[in-house]
Length: 349
Ligand code: KG4
Ligand code: ZN
Image 1: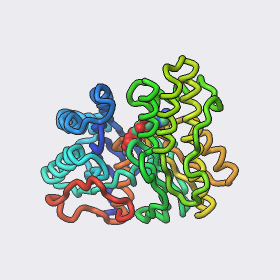
Image 2 (image 1 turned 120 degrees about the horizontal axis):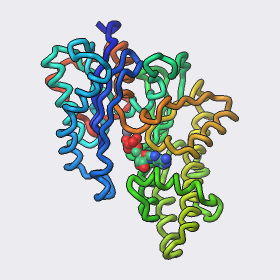
Image 3 (image 1 turned 90 degrees about the horizontal axis):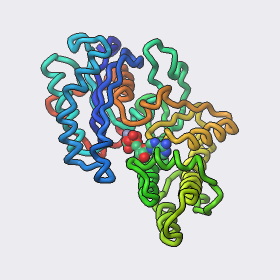
Image 4 (image 1 turned 180 degrees about the horizontal axis):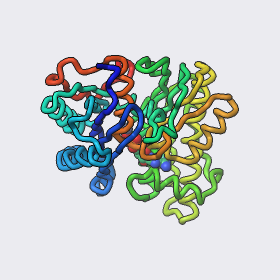
């Protein structure tokens, strides 16, 4: 059965995006994402109960649309995949419940996917003609995963063989971008607004610290940088437009330097054959530019998903992870017992 798993319907409801996708192997036939950003905007962050209610409202139409856009009927699907964790418990359970019901009703095998494995191998996703994506993977690889909830360095020895070699000791990178954006009174979600403003600023105007510069390990820390920004803004008082742009650019410079320093240390330590990057913060152009430049010096190829909608939360990356899991025969043994695991670790995938 494992070898014949071609058409996969995947669902992700780990946070504030209701997402469903259909892939043929790793080729994306549809990738539907219903974002709840506008709803959570007034709370300045994800409000769990609102997220649950929205997932309940959107899950059926989003799954229906993913099949329709792929031109595939549910009967033709070979396996159903769903994000089991990590994520918000009450959000995850909407997706898990839907996947279980579909698997039972249509008698399909079920695959439980780790959301972070999805981010890690999102660059393997191909468009429907197979024109983009990684064709000749070489291992070991180092993955840098940066999102609103996670900041991790993962050593990938092969599909399913992961070791977490670095992680944040406090805030995630995206969370820090969002908090500093709030200090600057920017729109939610703050990361994109801050990086847009930073383009007009002078990155050397303020001298913010680069966290854990000589710690020697592969962990991250963003709370000190966030606090330095808070104190600086309190000292400066009301900022002019120009000062705000300078502030954003200077903060971005430190945050990017921190991420790139740690990635470079990981590459020197593990000498990977390739670097994989994923997660919402990778949308940051400065970060991508610096990573590519540094990895160029290190002579290590960097792979980024071919489309930006594969960086933020989506279900196509879950389908791609599920495809490789199916090849390894990793199906859920008793689908009726599948439950969400909000703090699921990548190392046991
Ligand atoms: O992966 P993602 O969509 O959701 C999580 O799983 O968390 O990541 C969202 C995070 C948010 O914190 C958002 O502000 C950040 O990614 N982000 C950015 C940029 N675009 C999104 N951070 C910095 N620069 C950006 N251009
Ligand atoms: Zn995510």
